[in-house]
Amino acid sequence: MSSKLPHLSTNEMNILWDLRTNNPRQFYTNVTSFFVQEMKKYVYHNQVFRVSIMGETRSGKSEAGQTIGFKYRDVFNDALKNGYINSRGQVVDFKEQVESRLNGAIKVELIDFNSEKIMASGSDYLYKIRDLTRDDNLRFGQIWQIDENREKSGLGSYTEKQESDNMNNIIAKFCQCEIWIQPRRFTDSNTPYGIRMFKKDMVNRCNWGLLYKIEMNPEGINYNFLGWLKLNLHSEDKHRMEYEVKKNAWIKAEMEGVVDDRLKLRHEVAKLLSADSDFTQLNKKGTNFLRSKTQQVAILERWIMERKCQNFNELEKSTIIDIARDLAYKDLF
Image (spheres, rainbow, N blue to C red):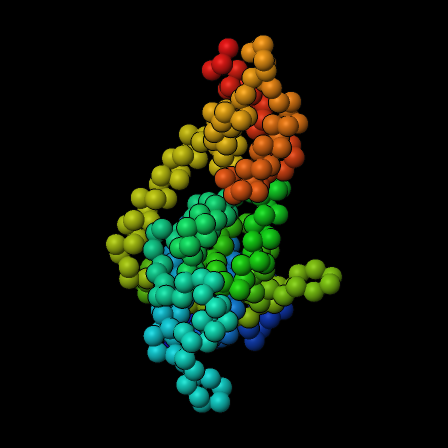
Protein backbone atom coordinates (compact mmCIF):
# COMPACT_ATOMS: atom_id res chain seq x y z
CA MET A 1 0.00 0.00 0.00
CA SER A 2 1.19 3.52 -0.79
CA SER A 3 2.32 5.64 2.14
CA LYS A 4 1.55 8.86 0.30
CA LEU A 5 -0.90 11.35 1.75
CA PRO A 6 -3.47 13.43 -0.13
CA HIS A 7 -2.43 16.76 -1.52
CA LEU A 8 -4.41 19.37 0.41
CA SER A 9 -5.06 22.94 -0.66
CA THR A 10 -4.73 25.87 1.73
CA ASN A 11 -8.52 25.94 2.17
CA GLU A 12 -8.62 22.21 2.90
CA MET A 13 -5.84 22.57 5.47
CA ASN A 14 -7.81 25.38 7.11
CA ILE A 15 -10.93 23.20 7.28
CA LEU A 16 -8.90 20.50 9.03
CA TRP A 17 -6.91 22.89 11.23
CA ASP A 18 -8.25 21.60 14.56
CA LEU A 19 -7.79 17.99 13.55
CA ARG A 20 -4.21 18.63 12.47
CA THR A 21 -3.42 20.62 15.63
CA ASN A 22 -4.89 18.09 18.06
CA ASN A 23 -3.70 14.96 16.22
CA PRO A 24 -0.41 15.87 14.47
CA ARG A 25 0.98 12.31 14.29
CA GLN A 26 -2.27 10.78 13.00
CA PHE A 27 -2.80 13.62 10.54
CA TYR A 28 0.41 12.71 8.71
CA THR A 29 -0.20 8.93 8.80
CA ASN A 30 -1.60 6.69 6.06
CA VAL A 31 -3.55 3.89 7.79
CA THR A 32 -4.77 2.05 4.67
CA SER A 33 -2.69 -1.07 5.38
CA PHE A 34 -3.86 -1.06 9.00
CA PHE A 35 -7.50 -0.92 7.88
CA VAL A 36 -7.06 -3.89 5.54
CA GLN A 37 -5.35 -5.90 8.31
CA GLU A 38 -8.23 -5.09 10.65
CA MET A 39 -10.68 -6.32 8.02
CA LYS A 40 -8.75 -9.59 7.79
CA LYS A 41 -8.72 -9.91 11.58
CA TYR A 42 -12.51 -9.57 11.72
CA VAL A 43 -12.90 -12.20 8.99
CA TYR A 44 -10.48 -14.68 10.59
CA HIS A 45 -12.09 -14.28 14.03
CA ASN A 46 -15.64 -14.62 12.63
CA GLN A 47 -16.52 -11.15 13.89
CA VAL A 48 -19.07 -8.80 12.34
CA PHE A 49 -17.23 -6.16 10.31
CA ARG A 50 -19.18 -2.90 10.16
CA VAL A 51 -18.11 0.45 8.75
CA SER A 52 -19.96 3.78 8.87
CA ILE A 53 -19.26 6.33 6.14
CA MET A 54 -20.24 10.00 6.27
CA GLY A 55 -19.43 13.02 4.12
CA GLU A 56 -20.77 15.80 1.96
CA THR A 57 -22.75 15.21 -1.23
CA ARG A 58 -20.59 13.88 -4.09
CA SER A 59 -17.66 13.20 -1.75
CA GLY A 60 -17.37 9.58 -2.92
CA LYS A 61 -19.20 7.85 -0.05
CA SER A 62 -20.97 5.17 -2.11
CA GLU A 63 -17.95 4.48 -4.31
CA ALA A 64 -15.74 4.14 -1.22
CA GLY A 65 -18.27 1.79 0.38
CA GLN A 66 -18.29 -0.40 -2.71
CA THR A 67 -14.48 -0.50 -2.82
CA ILE A 68 -14.56 -1.76 0.78
CA GLY A 69 -17.29 -4.27 -0.11
CA PHE A 70 -15.25 -5.76 -2.95
CA LYS A 71 -12.11 -5.92 -0.79
CA TYR A 72 -14.00 -7.66 2.01
CA ARG A 73 -15.45 -10.15 -0.49
CA ASP A 74 -11.96 -11.01 -1.72
CA VAL A 75 -10.56 -11.40 1.81
CA PHE A 76 -13.45 -13.60 2.92
CA ASN A 77 -13.45 -15.82 -0.17
CA ASP A 78 -9.69 -16.24 -0.06
CA ALA A 79 -9.92 -17.39 3.57
CA LEU A 80 -12.75 -19.78 2.71
CA LYS A 81 -10.84 -21.33 -0.19
CA ASN A 82 -7.31 -21.33 1.18
CA GLY A 83 -7.53 -20.88 4.94
CA TYR A 84 -5.22 -18.40 6.66
CA ILE A 85 -2.05 -18.31 8.75
CA ASN A 86 -2.65 -17.44 12.40
CA SER A 87 -0.34 -15.55 14.77
CA ARG A 88 1.51 -18.80 15.58
CA GLY A 89 2.33 -19.42 11.93
CA GLN A 90 -0.17 -22.28 11.70
CA VAL A 91 -2.47 -22.77 8.69
CA VAL A 92 -6.11 -22.63 9.81
CA ASP A 93 -8.90 -24.30 7.82
CA PHE A 94 -11.29 -21.35 7.88
CA LYS A 95 -14.27 -23.23 6.42
CA GLU A 96 -13.96 -26.03 8.98
CA GLN A 97 -13.56 -23.46 11.77
CA VAL A 98 -16.79 -21.69 10.80
CA GLU A 99 -18.85 -24.82 10.17
CA SER A 100 -17.89 -26.31 13.53
CA ARG A 101 -19.40 -23.27 15.25
CA LEU A 102 -22.58 -23.10 13.21
CA ASN A 103 -23.55 -26.78 13.03
CA GLY A 104 -25.49 -26.33 9.78
CA ALA A 105 -27.48 -23.29 10.98
CA ILE A 106 -26.54 -21.20 7.91
CA LYS A 107 -24.88 -21.65 4.52
CA VAL A 108 -21.09 -21.34 4.48
CA GLU A 109 -20.26 -20.57 0.86
CA LEU A 110 -18.34 -18.08 -1.25
CA ILE A 111 -19.98 -14.67 -1.04
CA ASP A 112 -20.50 -12.01 -3.67
CA PHE A 113 -20.82 -8.24 -3.52
CA ASN A 114 -23.01 -6.79 -6.26
CA SER A 115 -25.84 -4.30 -6.78
CA GLU A 116 -28.27 -6.77 -5.14
CA LYS A 117 -26.27 -6.42 -1.91
CA ILE A 118 -26.77 -2.65 -1.83
CA MET A 119 -29.95 -1.59 -0.03
CA ALA A 120 -31.67 1.77 -0.33
CA SER A 121 -32.38 2.01 3.39
CA GLY A 122 -32.24 0.26 6.73
CA SER A 123 -35.86 -0.83 6.16
CA ASP A 124 -34.98 -2.58 2.90
CA TYR A 125 -32.06 -4.28 4.61
CA LEU A 126 -34.18 -5.47 7.54
CA TYR A 127 -36.83 -7.04 5.30
CA LYS A 128 -34.22 -8.50 2.92
CA ILE A 129 -32.49 -10.33 5.77
CA ARG A 130 -35.85 -11.65 6.97
CA ASP A 131 -36.79 -12.93 3.53
CA LEU A 132 -33.43 -14.66 3.06
CA THR A 133 -33.64 -16.23 6.51
CA ARG A 134 -37.18 -17.46 5.87
CA ASP A 135 -36.07 -19.08 2.60
CA ASP A 136 -32.83 -20.49 4.11
CA ASN A 137 -30.76 -18.43 1.66
CA LEU A 138 -28.72 -16.38 4.13
CA ARG A 139 -24.96 -16.84 3.77
CA PHE A 140 -22.44 -16.61 6.58
CA GLY A 141 -20.16 -13.59 6.29
CA GLN A 142 -22.15 -11.74 3.64
CA ILE A 143 -21.40 -8.02 3.42
CA TRP A 144 -24.10 -5.43 2.63
CA GLN A 145 -24.13 -1.73 1.87
CA ILE A 146 -26.98 0.39 3.23
CA ASP A 147 -26.88 3.40 0.95
CA GLU A 148 -27.78 6.94 2.07
CA ASN A 149 -29.62 5.63 5.14
CA ARG A 150 -32.37 8.16 5.85
CA GLU A 151 -33.64 9.54 9.14
CA LYS A 152 -37.12 8.09 9.58
CA SER A 153 -40.24 9.19 11.43
CA GLY A 154 -43.87 8.17 11.53
CA LEU A 155 -45.94 5.22 12.72
CA GLY A 156 -43.76 2.16 13.28
CA SER A 157 -40.41 3.89 12.68
CA TYR A 158 -39.28 3.54 16.30
CA THR A 159 -40.37 -0.10 16.36
CA GLU A 160 -38.49 -0.71 13.13
CA LYS A 161 -35.36 0.91 14.63
CA GLN A 162 -35.63 -1.39 17.66
CA GLU A 163 -36.11 -4.42 15.41
CA SER A 164 -33.05 -3.44 13.38
CA ASP A 165 -30.95 -3.01 16.54
CA ASN A 166 -32.16 -6.35 17.91
CA MET A 167 -31.40 -8.08 14.62
CA ASN A 168 -27.96 -6.44 14.63
CA ASN A 169 -27.18 -8.11 17.94
CA ILE A 170 -28.94 -11.43 17.46
CA ILE A 171 -27.55 -12.38 14.03
CA ALA A 172 -23.97 -11.50 14.96
CA LYS A 173 -23.23 -15.24 15.05
CA PHE A 174 -24.19 -15.40 11.35
CA CYS A 175 -21.70 -12.58 10.68
CA GLN A 176 -23.76 -10.30 8.44
CA CYS A 177 -21.34 -7.45 7.77
CA GLU A 178 -22.43 -3.94 6.86
CA ILE A 179 -21.32 -0.68 5.29
CA TRP A 180 -23.62 2.11 6.52
CA ILE A 181 -23.75 5.41 4.66
CA GLN A 182 -25.24 8.46 6.39
CA PRO A 183 -24.19 11.87 5.10
CA ARG A 184 -24.38 13.83 8.35
CA ARG A 185 -23.12 11.46 11.05
CA PHE A 186 -21.72 8.05 11.86
CA THR A 187 -24.34 5.39 12.51
CA ASP A 188 -24.47 3.84 15.98
CA SER A 189 -25.13 0.23 14.87
CA ASN A 190 -22.25 -1.37 16.81
CA THR A 191 -19.86 -0.02 14.21
CA PRO A 192 -16.15 -0.29 15.12
CA TYR A 193 -14.88 2.02 12.37
CA GLY A 194 -16.07 5.27 10.81
CA ILE A 195 -14.81 7.02 7.69
CA ARG A 196 -15.35 10.70 6.97
CA MET A 197 -14.90 11.10 3.23
CA PHE A 198 -12.99 14.27 2.51
CA LYS A 199 -11.23 14.43 -0.86
CA LYS A 200 -11.71 13.01 -4.35
CA ASP A 201 -8.55 12.58 -6.42
CA MET A 202 -9.70 11.86 -9.98
CA VAL A 203 -6.16 12.09 -11.36
CA ASN A 204 -5.02 9.14 -9.25
CA ARG A 205 -8.51 7.55 -9.29
CA CYS A 206 -8.98 7.36 -5.55
CA ASN A 207 -10.98 8.82 -2.66
CA TRP A 208 -9.41 9.91 0.61
CA GLY A 209 -11.16 9.56 3.94
CA LEU A 210 -10.37 10.21 7.59
CA LEU A 211 -10.51 6.96 9.56
CA TYR A 212 -11.94 6.88 13.10
CA LYS A 213 -12.10 4.11 15.69
CA ILE A 214 -15.56 4.21 17.27
CA GLU A 215 -15.57 2.97 20.84
CA MET A 216 -18.48 2.56 23.23
CA ASN A 217 -18.02 3.31 26.92
CA PRO A 218 -20.34 3.90 29.92
CA GLU A 219 -20.24 7.65 29.30
CA GLY A 220 -21.08 7.55 25.59
CA ILE A 221 -19.20 7.14 22.32
CA ASN A 222 -15.60 8.11 21.56
CA TYR A 223 -14.42 8.89 18.03
CA ASN A 224 -10.65 8.42 17.91
CA PHE A 225 -8.98 9.76 14.78
CA LEU A 226 -6.42 7.31 13.35
CA GLY A 227 -5.24 8.81 10.06
CA TRP A 228 -5.83 8.91 6.31
CA LEU A 229 -7.47 6.08 4.38
CA LYS A 230 -6.88 5.77 0.63
CA LEU A 231 -9.67 3.98 -1.26
CA ASN A 232 -8.96 3.38 -4.92
CA LEU A 233 -11.87 3.50 -7.36
CA HIS A 234 -12.96 -0.09 -7.94
CA SER A 235 -12.58 -1.65 -11.38
CA GLU A 236 -16.02 -3.33 -11.52
CA ASP A 237 -17.45 -1.20 -14.35
CA LYS A 238 -20.49 -3.42 -15.00
CA HIS A 239 -21.38 -3.22 -11.31
CA ARG A 240 -20.96 0.57 -11.35
CA MET A 241 -23.44 0.87 -14.23
CA GLU A 242 -25.98 -1.44 -12.51
CA TYR A 243 -25.64 0.54 -9.30
CA GLU A 244 -26.26 3.86 -11.05
CA VAL A 245 -29.45 2.49 -12.63
CA LYS A 246 -30.61 1.27 -9.23
CA LYS A 247 -29.77 4.54 -7.49
CA ASN A 248 -31.54 6.60 -10.16
CA ALA A 249 -34.70 4.56 -9.49
CA TRP A 250 -34.40 5.30 -5.76
CA ILE A 251 -33.97 9.02 -6.42
CA LYS A 252 -36.96 9.07 -8.78
CA ALA A 253 -39.11 7.29 -6.20
CA GLU A 254 -38.01 9.74 -3.49
CA MET A 255 -38.84 12.76 -5.69
CA GLU A 256 -42.24 11.29 -6.51
CA GLY A 257 -43.01 10.95 -2.83
CA VAL A 258 -43.33 7.16 -2.79
CA VAL A 259 -44.55 5.94 0.60
CA ASP A 260 -42.24 4.13 2.99
CA ASP A 261 -42.03 0.34 3.15
CA ARG A 262 -43.57 0.09 6.60
CA LEU A 263 -46.76 1.85 5.44
CA LYS A 264 -47.01 -0.37 2.37
CA LEU A 265 -46.51 -3.44 4.54
CA ARG A 266 -49.37 -2.46 6.87
CA HIS A 267 -51.74 -2.05 3.92
CA GLU A 268 -50.61 -5.34 2.35
CA VAL A 269 -51.32 -7.24 5.59
CA ALA A 270 -54.67 -5.46 5.97
CA LYS A 271 -55.65 -6.47 2.43
CA LEU A 272 -54.83 -10.12 3.17
CA LEU A 273 -56.82 -10.00 6.40
CA SER A 274 -59.83 -8.51 4.61
CA ALA A 275 -59.90 -11.57 2.35
CA ASP A 276 -59.57 -14.07 5.21
CA SER A 277 -62.80 -15.98 5.92
CA ASP A 278 -62.02 -16.28 9.62
CA PHE A 279 -61.45 -12.54 9.96
CA THR A 280 -64.51 -11.52 7.90
CA GLN A 281 -67.02 -14.07 9.23
CA LEU A 282 -70.42 -12.40 9.71
CA ASN A 283 -72.96 -12.76 12.51
CA LYS A 284 -76.18 -14.76 12.01
CA LYS A 285 -78.06 -11.71 10.75
CA GLY A 286 -75.29 -10.96 8.28
CA THR A 287 -75.24 -7.34 9.37
CA ASN A 288 -71.84 -7.12 11.02
CA PHE A 289 -68.66 -9.05 11.77
CA LEU A 290 -69.04 -12.00 14.08
CA ARG A 291 -65.81 -11.15 15.89
CA SER A 292 -65.09 -7.99 17.81
CA LYS A 293 -62.13 -5.80 16.93
CA THR A 294 -60.22 -7.28 19.89
CA GLN A 295 -60.80 -10.77 18.54
CA GLN A 296 -59.70 -9.67 15.08
CA VAL A 297 -56.48 -8.30 16.60
CA ALA A 298 -55.98 -11.77 18.06
CA ILE A 299 -56.22 -13.22 14.53
CA LEU A 300 -53.50 -10.83 13.39
CA GLU A 301 -51.34 -11.82 16.36
CA ARG A 302 -51.82 -15.49 15.46
CA TRP A 303 -50.60 -14.66 11.95
CA ILE A 304 -47.53 -13.04 13.48
CA MET A 305 -46.83 -16.11 15.62
CA GLU A 306 -47.30 -18.37 12.59
CA ARG A 307 -44.89 -16.10 10.65
CA LYS A 308 -47.47 -15.26 8.03
CA CYS A 309 -46.45 -11.64 8.54
CA GLN A 310 -43.91 -9.71 10.58
CA ASN A 311 -44.47 -8.21 14.02
CA PHE A 312 -46.05 -4.79 14.57
CA ASN A 313 -46.45 -2.54 17.59
CA GLU A 314 -49.85 -2.15 19.26
CA LEU A 315 -50.81 1.07 17.45
CA GLU A 316 -49.88 -0.48 14.11
CA LYS A 317 -51.99 -3.57 14.87
CA SER A 318 -54.99 -1.37 15.61
CA THR A 319 -54.43 0.59 12.38
CA ILE A 320 -54.14 -2.61 10.33
CA ILE A 321 -57.40 -3.95 11.76
CA ASP A 322 -59.22 -0.68 10.98
CA ILE A 323 -57.97 -0.78 7.37
CA ALA A 324 -58.87 -4.47 7.00
CA ARG A 325 -62.39 -3.94 8.41
CA ASP A 326 -62.94 -1.02 6.03
CA LEU A 327 -61.79 -3.05 3.03
CA ALA A 328 -63.97 -6.01 4.06
CA TYR A 329 -67.04 -3.78 4.53
CA LYS A 330 -66.70 -2.53 0.97
CA ASP A 331 -66.63 -6.12 -0.35
CA LEU A 332 -69.33 -7.58 1.90
CA PHE A 333 -71.96 -4.86 2.08
